[in-house]
Length: 96
Image (cartoon, rainbow, N blue to C red):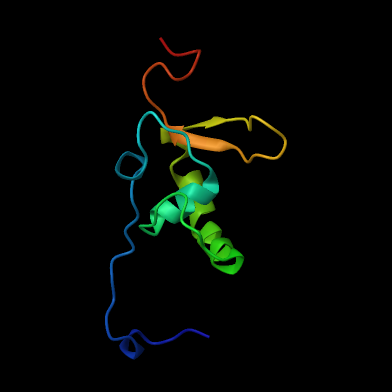
């Protein structure tokens, strides 16, 4: 059920990092690592599974929203997730 704004002590802008602000240009990150970074945590921070699921709910749309600014790499093994990174000049084979 919707809640009146007056029920909250303070409102904040819904402002998310850009890939340039969040990701190092020469690094690739899993969606789990990006989720932690979006919350101001270290990429390898230990968080419980429930919290991680909630963070992923925010992260997956962020990745989709910034897809034009990102590159993706296939997992190196079947046990790994995919990796995402900032797209830089020369990252893609078809770029000149």
